[in-house]
Length: 72
Image 1 (cartoon, helix red, strand yellow):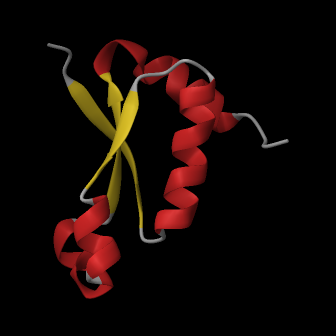
Image 2 (cartoon, rainbow, N blue to C red):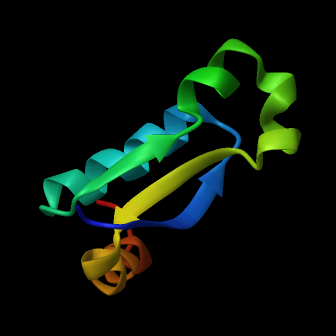
C-alpha cells in the first residue's frame, strides 16, 4: 500500500478541489484529508490544520512541479 504525504493545506474546499483536479488530470494519485469534517464545520479548520492535499509518496516531486506551473 502506497504511503501518502501532505503537500499543502487549504481552508476553502472549492480551491482544494480545483488543485486536486489539476493533479488528478496529470495522472497523480492524490486525495483530500479532513475535507468532509471541515466542510460541515469550518470552525474546526484551525484545529485540524485545514483540508490536507495528500499525494502518493512516489509522486510528490511531480505533483509539486505541476502545482508550480501557472493555471490555464
